[in-house]
Length: 200
Image (cartoon, rainbow, N blue to C red):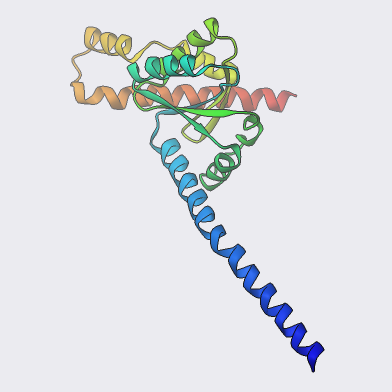
């Protein structure tokens, strides 16, 4: 009888200990799910999301980069690769996992994707430790050379000047026209990428 009672006490203690372990895990899981949802929203609402490796940049340099991006209606957020992979999977974005290695920050371009990309490439010229990895537009992943092509596009201001100079179109149509140009650009890049992949 004594052995049986001891066995019961041990199992009761083990059960209690397992419950104690489970309790702190729940808030952690909930917090991770919240962060994943935030990353999904950032990618979904952005005109473009550019992934960069900021390893080696000082706090002062990151502050300077944030300021330059803010001037172009963009922001940069440091994220965890595992949670970003989960968000990309939830959004059915294929091909992003390969770029989620090492420290990663997401540049969220809310207004002008070309201008935000240009800020990053210009900053990298004087701060070579900043590495542009890839970008996501319309749930399509762009490689680094394609992001560079995006950075070389005319800025929003230049496009607006051309529209106003050569057309009598109402201003409210400009945003839609710009989005259409960007969408066609991305689809063209994706078609070229698929063609090259087919040739290989």
